[in-house]
Length: 576
Image (tube, rainbow, N blue to C red):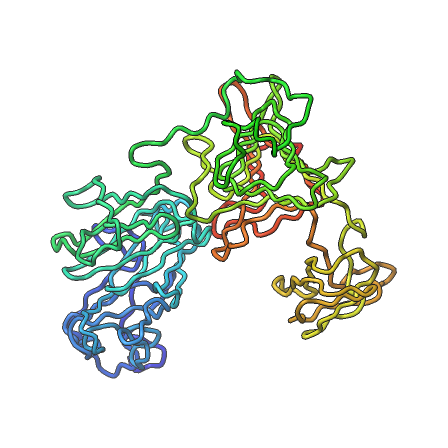
């Protein structure tokens, strides 16, 4: 083995191991090793990236003492003070063990495997809990079978690891986990980031004497000596699962983790959407005013935090500034008053109910297609990830901070000139420039927001700015540019063809807008959800008509809830 490139030992990620799933990362125990003229003792790799684990039982492999562990170098294993990867005899190798550190913890590398992840595609990611040391783990190929797909990886004991998947890193719902050879006193915490409003998670044992039994969840972070499989779900964004060696007779632990939308006592009844109406089936010919207390229940205007319903027969004008509401249900018509300069409709959730041939749909409106709204109208959704959700059926919830459209949403802002509301840079914008020149006159105003588009291949070079002053085609910005934006007096002409390479400058501000609450540092904005739902005798299909409408501070980070979301709707909704 003194020839360059040869190695004494190599792991086999493809090999099987009795009683475990064939996903790689198996442990090999080595003892009584004797080497002669060996410059490289261990090599990792092969057809599957090296994920095996070697245990130096008696210290003869490494010379570092009994109980030393080796694995291929991976960022999540390289833990300063516990594991090292700078040994010449072990290239590309992480070496962990109690004799390598002053830490009294008996550090070991143990195997975890994952399969049946609903949204897991191609790669799984593992990182230490502080966010450093991120490793991508390739999915096991279908060709190896038993099982067809899954992931396996070695992890260091007494640590906490974040686990996510490529398809939707934070959209975790369920997975099967296998942990091998966790001994007494050993533990691993797994942290799964959760993006949806699950009521709870259940961890079920698939091995040992407790097979198919649920492991009791903890109301706080479980202690390291708690039963393996104990979980803690803090209710909105993180699920913690403890894997511990509390049962020394159980060398192989298997668990299923599954999300549940409804409480353990059962799903609550969703609001009826709706049964055949006993209420008025036609809209009133006259207009009511929000400010008229006599028409409201008890003769009292809605107060801050109240849940409010606009009856189906009503045609209601927002002639005053309403308070911040709880849940607003619109069965009738609610529209903004042109006589008010600014009106903001704020609520935790807004539900616009549908209708059919028997009675009219709910409608929220600002202006009309022929007469756009000339003042300022704002629809603002309040709340955060912890706010109560709006449930549409037993199995569907629309989340929080949401505007659900099962009826009609018609918003018509004032058109701006140029018609497209965007122009191009007439002169290049350089880093540190506080003024830009556009290629044509605009009607944009001080205080309005614009975006200067990227003119290279980096999308994040687009920059949002507020207009501080306007002088002809020159716009003064509230702060300097950070990136170069190409500009010229006209588009390029090449062989008689026009090539537009100039950076676009677009106006974002509109007088009619939908927005999330100002406090959205958790990147959890509003969600406009246009969808359908089946009632007792009919389907409700939402529709929207948006023209010159601004949508800002919307979209809910790391969820499948977008700023403007069309889901299971018929043709007919449109925006311009």
